[in-house]
Every structure is written in structure tokens, then in C-alpha cells.
Amino acid sequence: MVREHALLPVIAGRESEFEAAFDVARPIIASMPGFRTLSLSRSIESPSTYLLLVEWETLEDHTEGFRSSPEYARWRDLLHHFYDPFPVVEHYVTIEPR
Image (cartoon, rainbow, N blue to C red; front, side, top):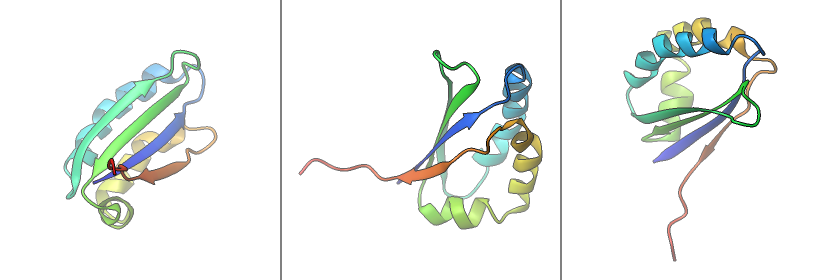
């Protein structure tokens, strides 16, 4: 399992609009092969910043499958205009106890 981590810097004053658009976008990503789960959290200290965590079966399910799909184009159209600057996305794997 791979966890995608993205801090989403939403333009101040557009948070409600972003959240509404995200509600529309959520089923798009949830329908993708390899998708496991997603959470979106809003920062208390910086209310225009959101934390997106998505779990994928493999890294490629996100980087190749989702990002090269027609569904990603719809995701991008719904959400990317809310970000300033564009988010940094990183991927993590869980470290199991030794």
C-alpha cells in the first residue's frame, strides 16, 4: 500500500467553493483502479490549507493509472484552479516494526 500526501494551499476566500468542488471530485478518484481510501482535512492554524491523504494499492496506480486517465482531466478541471501555489505531492510507505 502507498499513501499519497498532498498539502493543498487553497486561495484564501475560496475554501467553501473548493470543498464543494471536492465533493464532486471525490467519486472520480474513488472509481479508479487501485484506489483504497481518501481523507481530506482542513488545517486549524492555516484554514486555507488542506491535507489530502489517498491510499493506493501501488505507486503506479496513482502516477500512471490515475494521472494518465481521462478521469484525471476532470479532477484537474474541478480542483487545480483553487491552488496557489500548486501542491507538492509525495508518496509514502509504512515502516513495519522490526
